Length: 196
Image: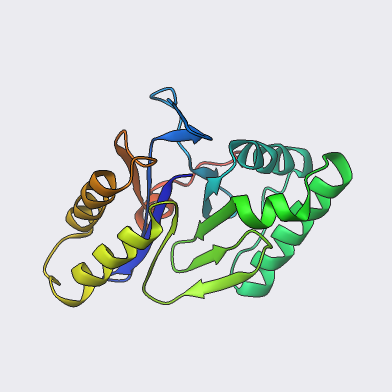
C-alpha cells in the first residue's frame, strides 16, 4: 500500500503521497522521476492511487484508451461516472475480482477546489477538510487532526512534512520520501494543451 493525504487550507487543495511501493512483504523502489500521481491536464484533476500497482497501471491504460481529455470532475456524480467507466473497462478487458478491487484499491481525486475519496468498490465521498488513505491512513488522520485543530499556524508544506515523518516512523510500508502538489496552483500555472 502507501499513504495518500489531501486537504484544503487557505482556499487551496493539497495532495501528497509517499514514494514507497510495496508488493506483499517486499519493498520495491520507484525510479526518481516516476510519481504516483496521474495528472489529467485538460480535466484539471490529479488522481493518486493506493493499493495494487497494477490497478493504477490499468487506470493509466484506461485514460489513454478512452482519450478522455476533457472529462469533468465538478461533482460526485461526474467522478462516479468516470470510475464506473473505469470499472467497465476493467471488467471488459481484464479479469479482476470484485473482492480484489474492494480490498486492494483506493484513490484520491483532487481538483483545484475539491477532493474526492474513491474506495475499492468505487463509492465516492467528497471531502470537506482533510483525508488520508492507504496503509498509513490511521496514523496520518491522527496527525492531520492534530495539525488542523491544535497547531493551526503551520503552512501546508509543514503539515505534510510533519504528517509524513510521523507515518514513516510508525508504518514500515510507507516511506522513501514524498511527492507533494498544490493542486490549485498547479492548474492555475499550467495551461498546457494536448496533455491528458
